[in-house]
Length: 387
Image 1: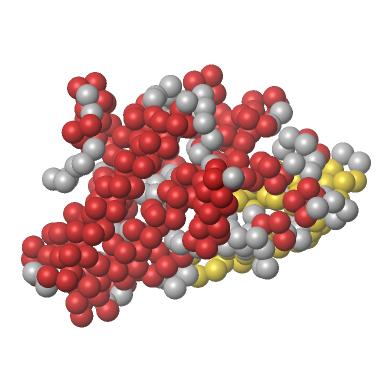
Image 2 (image 1 turned 90 degrees about the vertical axis):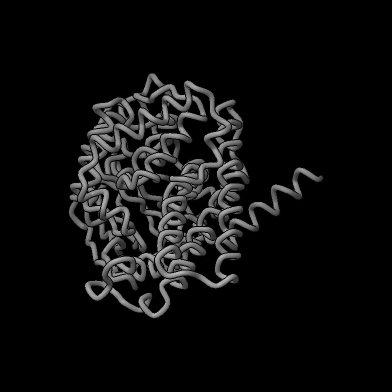
């Protein structure tokens, strides 16, 4: 990539590390998987698993985990550079549900038995996790969940419905928020359970997106029996664990490397077709915003490495990252002109995959907490600091 605002900030060791990551991606990633990611297509189950296993073999499966749990021991800059190069190199995006979400929850709050059982399987891609949070009527307002888990002896009996469950069709495990009591404040009555997806009483129904893909699902749970040992931490503390988990999810949604690759693709199209001054000005503006996001993410990662909470920083990264992603797909369509109307097999050459990615990305400012929710969280944090 010709435009690289970060490289000038790096020392020789960091540049060498970045080159090592880039070479590993080039030498390890199959061309078919790189092409799928480059066109914005959803990675297949096999592509994700093979890539995660390759990362595990190299010792890079979970860059942000503690070394004693299988992490790399990298500093904040190396973690950032690794993520950046994966995006720039069009590597399949490993779903965050294992390494970024439930993994950190388990090594922070889980029992010794849960750590021993699940953490190695996450690293080795032996388990595929999905997230059982959102419900009809309880999306960004997770405190409104109604799925019930009633304790009966040494088991919980779970009844309810989850929706927008990403990649549940591939998953063999789910971490779910359930309501274990209705007597306390809404947040205090929520617990987190680990559920095996092959348990009787679980039914999946696919949700086909506007882009034509099957990445989302409804999950119905009817008298699903879950061992009490699958409770994460303490009963009634699920809200706290969910907040911890979502901070990791939101910081993982920025997608700077992918956005840089999209910007390069946009410039290639403009070189072939030309552009009016208004479009060129819009591209310059999004380039500036992306550079600001890169530097902001690096600053937040450094603070997190010092043991500081991301707090509203995770919301800032999520908000701006997804807005930039949407703006880039819009600009790609503008640059293509009438060819942007082509969809699926009708889209060839520079138009391939662009319509689908544009449509799918309409949801990026909703999933992981809508932009409205993120702005409220940022405002509350700013008010608290000024109090």
